[in-house]
Length: 167
Image 1 (cartoon, rainbow, N blue to C red):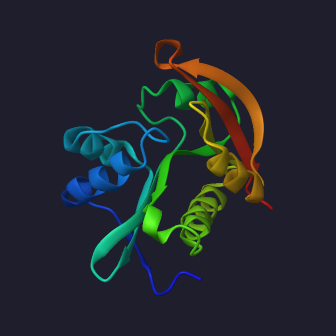
Image 2 (image 1 turned 135 degrees about the horizontal axis):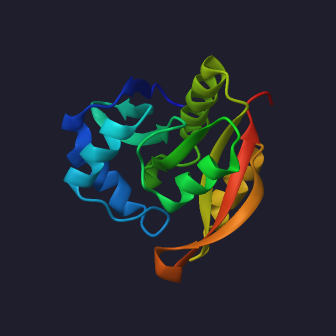
């Protein structure tokens, strides 16, 4: 149950709150400065937050195909050549996990991919350092591993994952 969390579009002014949520989820997502977060929001095709009682409790940042985004993982999916919406990061505050907020955020991403006519949603999940909770979560949503990649100079290994829009 989402317990009345409201979905809304993110703005540049949200960057400090997003950084707090983001960095609390490290190493599942990279540490990000407020300036880097603002840059991500500028590139994003979709940037949504979940708010409860005036505070952000979760967010998703996704890229449309062709975005000028230098991420190794995004570029891998771009080279693959399938139409997709790429989830760069999805974060739910630890205190809010298990309330159905992650699926709410992903439903919005799947809706966006469907609206744009793209057949899949893509993302990556850390294998090293391991993130078994995220792998299980994404598997429940229909994601399957379509590749593996070492990134950040070999310090991180990710499972490259995709899920069909029509589930």
